[in-house]
Image 1 (cartoon, one colour):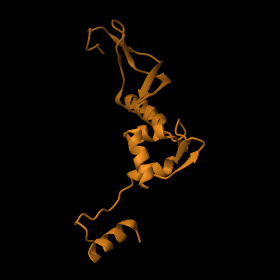
Image 2 (image 1 turned 120 degrees about the horizontal axis):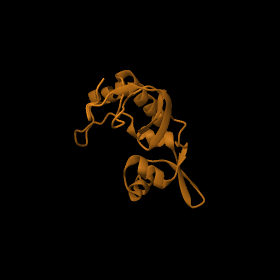
Image 3 (image 1 turned 90 degrees about the vertical axis):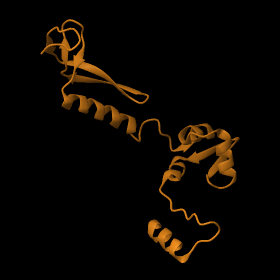
Image 4 (image 1 turned 120 degrees about the vertical axis):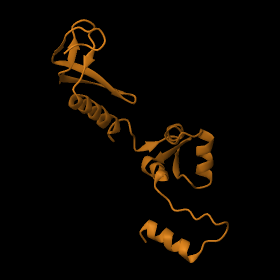
Length: 142
């Protein structure tokens, strides 16, 4: 097999590869890419490339990694991609629930993530019909 960059011969060798997904970086040993003898360009079989991506994605999505059960205001604002003032406003109007420990607020991660759960919203001014209530109840499973 010839390198697409320099035209030199490529050989399959066993090596390790660094992979990253988001802010995580891992090293996977035992992969066998084709490596160019001229420019060191590496080329992976589709199965190996997919495997590397899936390992990195699984690592990044793991619930055990840097995902504490309780969050402070700064962490919640980062998670929701809003300002800290918005978090305080949401706390004040009841959209978020937290406990104050000393001088800091602590939020349960699960309750914050529930803000992203699908919700039914009736948008007909100030009136909700019986049909609207039936649709909301069916969506909520009641």
